[in-house]
Picture 1: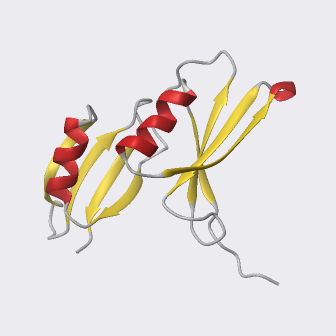
Picture 2: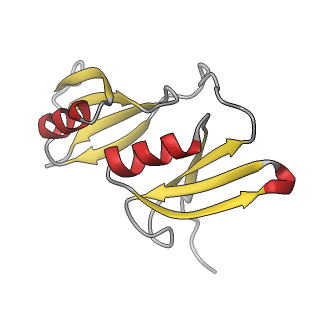
Length: 130
């Protein structure tokens, strides 16, 4: 029997193409697969940095006719490790991404972090991992 493994995080999005473009073109992920379910009135797109068989991915869920969601107060953020946080933020900013916390040490620590927002307002923490 296979060991338990984290598979994905699902985010509801208001515009699937806009969100796929953000995660693939802006953050450099790949669209791994897509499934349209007309009878359920939704489409799923899975994006990630590697194959689903070995790594966790993000499931972007578009429900037909819903163009906006409120992230709520329970959800915190996604986290992505990057080798050079300053260059990454510069590249993201040039691509039109909204940096909501500039790179710098985490409060009461030395880890260098930054935050960017996706098109639906979900927060993504960037953590420098040299």
